[in-house]
Image (cartoon, rainbow, N blue to C red; front, top):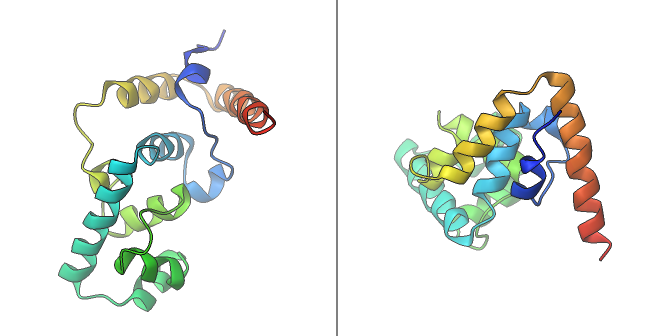
Length: 143
């Protein structure tokens, strides 16, 4: 039987697993981007990486598929963060994970526990868990 602790740990669902790359990256990204401080840290790290690389928003957009207006908002600090898919794409572009971009890679036991649970699941079990999470999220939205 699947470990139901996943339902208790995750309150948001990744709607597009295939574009995010894989299930575990998506779930970790969701968990990381829930806290405002992590979203701000992600944005600030993104800005530093862009400035260090000397890239334009158009160049980043073309390479990542993330819309240029969203990149512009992040660079101009008009947006605190981005959606999970874009965060994963931007982090990968700079050779990092979302956690690394947010500066929260180490010392987060909840995320480590979620990842450990996910990595033990087969692809079929992951699909079942995703369906369960979608149900939980749908119930929360309908309240």
